[in-house]
Image 1 (tube, helix red, strand yellow):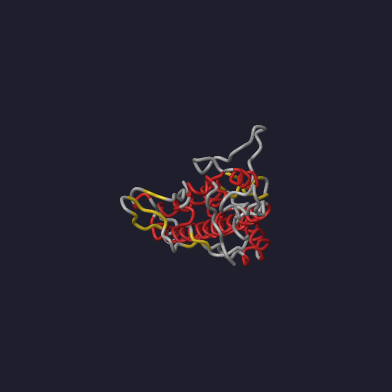
Image 2 (tube, helix red, strand yellow; image 1 turned 45 degrees about the vertical axis):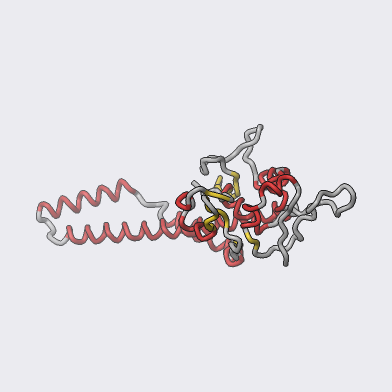
Amino acid sequence: MAFKLKPKVAKIDEVPEAYRALYVADGDHFAFKPDAEIEIPDVSAITSNRDAILAEKQALAAKYAGVDVEQYNRLTKEAKARAEAGAAAGDEGALAQMKELHKTEMKTARDREALLLGALGTHVVQNEALKAITARNGNPALLMPLVQQNVKMVEKDGQFSARVMQADGVTPRVNADGQPVGVDVLVSEWEANPLYAGAFKASGAGGSGSQPGASGFNGAVTKVGVAEIGANLEALASGKAVLSSSA
């Protein structure tokens, strides 16, 4: 299950080791480090090679599509019987070598496919997330880690898409009509939630009706300190403060 980033935790053991560097002791608990930063990985190489990745996946599937398991098992039993009967003293060693080679090739193919699907999943999720975030004047540096915690790539009839998951991390969310919930819906929910106000550019430009600190961030996609979120959640919810990222 994906780890949910929290502004404060009681014990550092509650945080996976990969994220502990983002926390610092603060009294009787641990909070985000003031200088912690989140960077969006460069996926341009994955984007440019997407067609090649899909083609290689299809080629691997085609390569092993014609394997006859029953025939393989029958030949294996026959070879073993000949070895036991002494008909061919060298069959046993050849059979063991053949089985080991087949086992190695299959493992290599499965590992390669898993690697390619993982890279493709990262691209699909980040691509759809970036479109949804920028469409609502959101800050990708702040919102992308939250998207990655709640969204996974799914495959249906050879088509890949990003789907919002339920709390268990494996079951896709659906709307009242039973249709999958897209990333755009998730981002719109955050936009309407006061706790995430600092992650979206303010629509107003000040004046007598504006609230203190409601200028929003400037829209630049840069490194952003995650401590700003954890230390100011209450202020963000009340509209007394916002987060701002500078170019």
